[in-house]
Image (cartoon, rainbow over all chains, first blue to last red; front, top):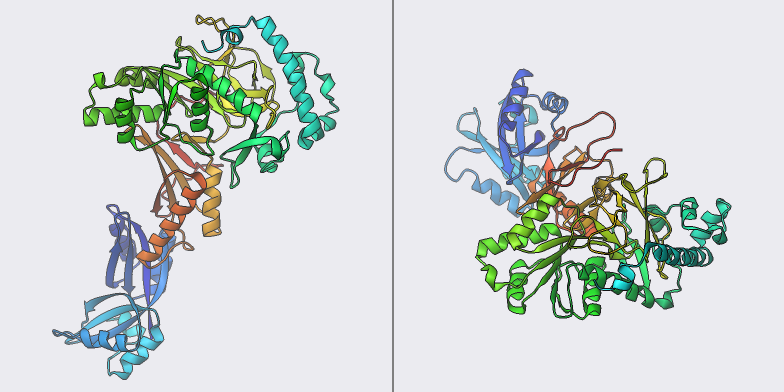
Length: 143
Length: 437
């Protein structure tokens, strides 16, 4: 149920993101989705990849500070207002969202939203009950 | 000259006075401070073994860790009821170094401070602005009591608040400024920035100390502020400022030898070196009653000048401090040991983090940055988690050091690894270079 996201600590200076993507490319790791949260001095790069364990190991060996975080993937209709009902479900279930990012899936007409929440299990149960598709991790890694 | 009788005393007479006082102090330390008695006993020494000034070289050294180990009052030679004031300075970790003053010590201090202030021909007609920090640090109150004792008009400003400092300097007609040399330069820059006409100031001299500086910096300060700038030296373990100060010849600092006996030693072997040879400065206090110290190793590297001075003072001079025989940094006049920062980082991360202390000078003011490599234990997947970590390190360091710091989280392997001992400090300031050997 939980999707493994790879988070990397990056200083806010030129070439750091390029270094990460180059390394992953060399290791044949495919990036499915990414987001960056940043301050003026540093940032956190968050990645969904086809092989999280391989990416984790490669980045760690490459000298980066890396961690794996459980996030929740939810498929929502790729139409105006598609995300809002999912957020309403989480709010009703009393789940706090730490952050989220989205990408358009290859699956026809759907967008994939990745949530970091304070209670992944409760969030997944509430969304499933409300009729949302919560894809298995393997499906997310291979979209 | 504040006290011509003493300051220009014939050396023979001065040595007699020193011997008499040294004997009294050794006796006091032996009788009243268990630490000294123990050391003497271990070495098979008795106070009466001190028969001449040369015998000083046989006495045990006192080091900063002795003061720390007897925190807070263990080295006091007077009961607390006779101690009228305490001051403190940075220890190497956590606890500060504490010194106590009896009423008599406070007057001794005022006397040596008046001599210091008198170096620039200050009299009761002068207005003396004290921009050293007041509080546990000895700078502010030391200068304050000396200037007041002399009868000058004291402006107890303490540090910072530069525009207000300048306003009062103009309005009160300040003639003598007391602060760190870097703060004097900063004041000069603010003068230029806000366009203070020099005619609006009566400033004529600066008593600058509490941090190392160079002759080049003196020239810059003198030119920009149009004053005589002299170097003053002291440390709280000995008394505070007032231990030594430059006369207007500006060729070394006269040591108040009737209160403090200096020695220069080889920091490796402890052997006493003759005048002219650089080494570690060691002081024995010979009049202090609260916290007397025998052969206190200052870790400051300098040399003694025993050639008579043109000013007529007979007390020996020390050259400007050339460096340190340990890793202490002086930042904005505050003593900082890398180990203090390290212990804060250890308490937060539970493992030894890779860190680097970067000291620089921006617009004449020292800046302190601490870089910390973000290891897996420290890493959080959320910005607020990392910002919280930054804030926590920042607040802890500030509360331990008492000066502001910028904390910077950096990627692993950013900080250079060197063979053997890790390089923990980068000091980019243009300070007098450390003398080797």
